[in-house]
Image (cartoon, rainbow, N blue to C red):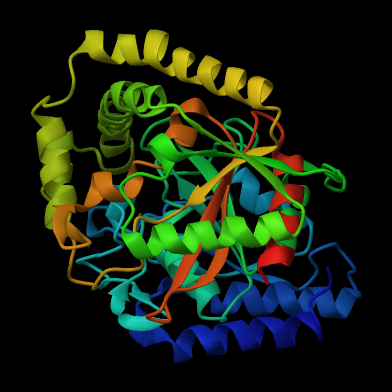
Length: 439
């Protein structure tokens, strides 16, 4: 997938586009010197790698050698990565060139990318709307057209929600598919590095470069599952109508789908999600605070700029997390039960993927960070947005959000697909087919 033109032209164009869109608060650092140097090297050597000359951006919690890895937080000011995360290194080997570190919800602990230190990441389709988080900068960079590819992370929807808000593709791989080093980890059970792109073909190319897997297999007779309860609940009416419209288009294209309800998914996800996330985040950040700053978690928390994130870290420093027995039950009972439930559903329904709207509604106003309006009801924003996303995260399943079109406001919405564990290339093939139908 050689980028049109020379590597230097592609990199210069990406850097210029990112600079021109600085008002969106997309980047925390432009990697001008290193990117142009690598582009010149490729052009001089005549390199012809699969991703030769492709500019890509990297979320600020991921290591790029010589760049700030500050998690978009003043608490880690000056923290420069000594080496690339393995995912970044593999993309470099394939010829891709990192051009910027991207803004995010501070320390990845949130879903709005409303960052007090670097400024809130604005939606490229309407700067008065949020980009979503925590990978808002990566999604906005791609959604704005400045670049076609990026690396981010996903704990409970951080790569899929902003992709849907900003109109690009966000892919969460099966847990363990990508190397996990080089990230400022929240939860080692839930976190994974992810890739984001302008379309499914780009995401598939990034995935292939990271994993060295071949072409995605063809899925000749697609069959999808729609779990109305829980995945289609909690949506506003417009999103429900838009999602149903997508299903109708797929049906006209000969794609079969079967409907069921399985409310146990939500109950098991709730039982596992927060005990795992909070317990493991506390453990990991006690270590990070000590190793990176020589501080206690309490002292580290005091340096965090965004009030919502600071309050969470202060609570963790006090030990305000679920009790050990809740974590043990989540890991040993609820999470395995959720995985078995999904395995059984895939077998019983004989489906290739589940499909549902990624978002409860289109992007809210950028300063609407606590509650979200769902048909006149003001609901807590975090659970309203993440209730569909957390199931795949807890179960460790591959999931991808692809653009579904535009709402009446002109803002993007996304449709999410969740696949079988380990069937990532098949899921990408399914997504490519749906992308074609929805185009």
